[in-house]
Amino acid sequence: MAKKKKRRGRGLLTLILILAILVGAGGYYVMGLRAVEPGNADPVEVSIPTGTGASAIVDILNDAGLLRNRLCAKVHVKITKYDSLQANTYVFNRGMTLQDMMKIINTGDYDYVAKQSVEVRDGVRLTQVAESMSEVLPYSPEEFLAKWSDREYLNELIDKYWFLTDEILDDDVMYPLEGYLYADTYYLTADCSTIEGFTEMCLDQMDVELSARRAEIEESGFTVHEFLTLTSIVTKEARSKDQPAVAGVFINRLDEGMSLGSDVTVGYIFQEDRVELTQAQLDSDNPYNTRKFAGLPPGPISTVVGGAMDATLHYKVSDDLFFFADEDGVVHFFKTQSDFEQGIEDFGLLTDEDEEE
Image (cartoon, rainbow, N blue to C red):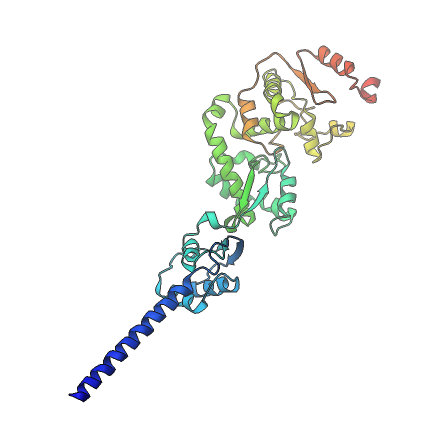
């Protein structure tokens, strides 16, 4: 009997020891998954490359100082099903648990994706967009412009976006996507870190803006391409407050069969924003020269925003056919050529060449 009691005692002690080990191991495991430094919200960026598995992600998080215990983390991802891990650059902190971070990576939670803001400015040319984006993405301005002129890629975009048509492929159009990349502030993520990704992010926003105005554009009698062309000229010619009146002048001139007489379209031929153009430039036979040719030029000349679209759609109705801006930026409007010329003279805006003529 004594031996049996002794064996039972040993068995109970072994069981207690095993339970203690299990409890201890469980506690060790739970502790190992906790945040490294609860309450610390200082951002830590980690990049998860495409195709990275759960175990490798643990190593990345550990190297970033975001794990309390690498072994416990390895055990956790081994027994937990993470089947949708998404590559990106994420912003975590040392106050987050492994479970928090793995859930974010598994869902690609956009709130935790590292974002770099870039601005596509209003009223700039496509070449200028290419230059500014080359400072952010690993492509030269020439590579951007080459992609934006690639017929195969352009046809793919035409198939994808309702507002892009074969009009952008016209031989007279200098840059097919000029005016179509909506001017706005964007946040770059891994999905839009290529030329194609960035381009389609801008086109997606243009889709939103044009779709909201689609019925009005159709009622205007302009195609989308013509509408954006006119809107871009209005954008370059006037400040926001003057745009409805300036748009009204251009509408009147189009209705009268007159040339638009816009120097900004001439400047576009030479990719310049100068106010004073040479006579040789003004005499250019390029179809963008609205000093010489009536009607709209072959395509847009700059980026645009919704405000300019609305100014063009809801232009100010008047009999004005002429305008100029004085040295203070104030725009003056006139109904006749003689009144316009007198206004130019009154404000001392005649050049030496004008006076000689």
